[in-house]
Length: 315
Ligand code: UDP
Image (cartoon, rainbow, N blue to C red; front, side):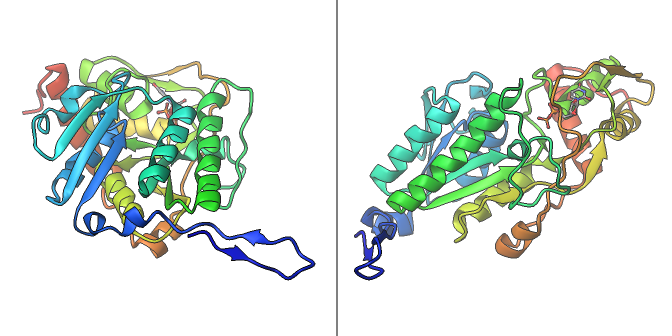
């Protein structure tokens, strides 16, 4: 029920957010969970599906358009009685709006995986959640950055106006098995290049930094956020910060010491530095990443070698 909070005759009355739908308190939600994951055939989404399917009380529905995701990532669940896969397109901002509408209708809790890109090319370092960011609204990466910023806005509007239970994770660069091999992200590029014996392409200047979180840590953080009481936004990422040159050197040393490192042109508006402040995640979720970059790289290498059909000749 919506409550009116009166501030006296001479003041406008302020509307308190309505209670979440009674469905949220229904028996089904206490005993069982029906979880919809949009983008569940993708890299992070499919790892989240694996983890959630371990719990027998969870029923998981994936909606994915397969633009970047793949059925292959979910093949072990296809046909499982607690699993359903739907080919469906939810485009970024409009997608969030549609899913918010659905969550409102059925009284579901909703988690948005937002991004460190909301901080743009950050002037505050490391980035805390209260930093509003430095985003070029008309640049080449703006549609992603601003799309996620609008998605966060919509989440909070639905929370304030309709009492929706929201959670917002700002996820930082994530890597691990099942990452797309050829979509141009830096860790996947370097690992694939090292395995194929091609030069590692460091985009200039090479001193720009990123902080890389292994996918199992990421999934653990997302689940804790979803299960806890805090709306967020909360940064989920690994604070270990590396320049792209350092990353290239590490991949070279670990996978192929013979490989060349070359520098190439960069794209405009590339953030110069990025590192999460994870104080909030530690305090509110009891979460921090466990897997260091040097532990994660070999796990990803193994997966890439299998998918590329190039076995290691180390032994
Ligand atoms: N990068 C690079 N070589 C590559 C691909 C990317 O040096 O082959 C750099 C890129 O310029 C950026 C960083 O790696 O500074 C991370 O790029 P990515 O696209 O992986 O993530 P994002 O920029 O979205 O954080």
